[in-house]
Length: 129
Image 1: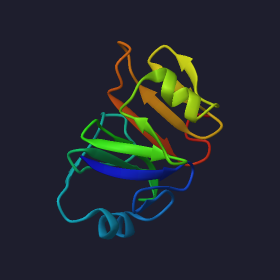
Image 2: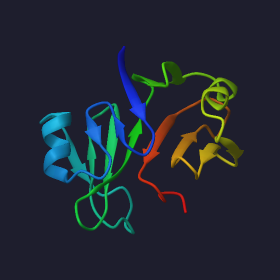
Image 3: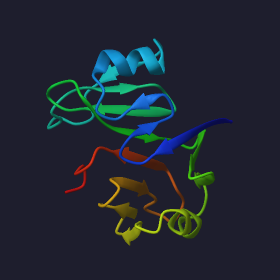
């Protein structure tokens, strides 16, 4: 299993939050599909299979969402995939919401609508405001 280190508000593996689309593609590699996540999306999303990269209307990376094929580490501890309790212990600003966990302070969202982690998203400052 691939392991990435995430630095909230800064980076996920080699991808820098706030980088332009070209820099993200150089860091993440050439194997992706571009698609529109929803009809109301401001821009297209890059799908790398085990993660998605989201951009604003200026092609600036605003978030990276990781799926269970990748293990994510924050501060030397695995936060994904694991249990909601363990993730919250590693990242104390995470609080439960209707779909899992969210930290508006660190722009992190864990999607776990049925108690099992399906994805974790790291965004730029203010992503969940």
